[in-house]
Amino acid sequence: MPTAPASPTSEQLPARTAAVWAALDPLVGAGTPLRVLDVGGGSGMFAVPLARLGHDVTVVDPSADALATLARRAQNDGVGARVRGVQGDGDLLHEVLPAADDAAAGYDLALCHYVLEVVDDPAVTLREIARVLRPGGQVSVATANRAGAVLARAVAGHPVEALALVEDRDPEPGRAKPARRRFTPGDLLALVEGAGLRPGPWRGVSVVADLLDATSGADPRAVRALEVAVAETSPYRDIATGLHVLAARA
Image (tube, rainbow, N blue to C red; front, side, top):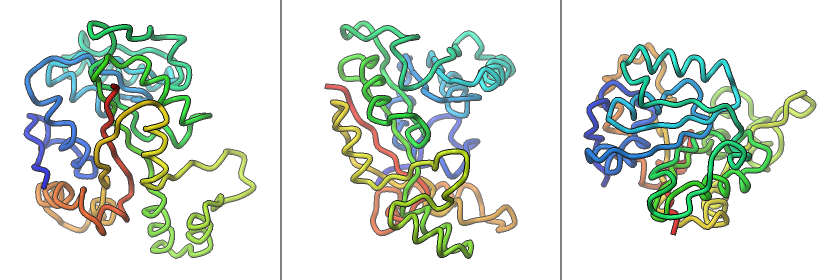
């Protein structure tokens, strides 16, 4: 069973991301400075805590507003020198970042959290990320879980939308924006392997945290501990809000 994150920031981080931080902790909490790439990292929910741990983080995001917020947040936290924002798209990383040609180049760790739902082509995005990882580097991929979305729609009283998700259809057809993708564990692992990456075990993200509202009175520490305990165990992980996997470049 995984253990709770030992990183100094773990107690201040949201319970819903506890399983992701627990998976990252052996890498980012070991005391060795890493070169980290955060694709679609926006305003720095992961980048700034990682910089506080001593890592150098490059955030690539298409939103100039999000990158401006990132810069302010990093400066306010005293880690502005370790956080760099680059405007660009995840499926066009070759336009803003060089490829990793050997072990001395490239990133030690890349984050791709809730990006594959909205990019033009998830497979291309993962191949672009693999291209900038050093040999042996790892990528942390988190996506929306189709089963969790089905359950959330059903509990909210929308069985027609829930059925559409079960059948892999758009739950809200006719809207201007394209539907966000949801993934099964098999979908996610196939994408990762198709990018030439070697995936580890998949886990659930926010198995219970998203079910608890602000008035529940639950102890955040207890929720974090529960999230970590059930993240890699079926049937709990199967109905989580999100999916997560760490994968390595050969």
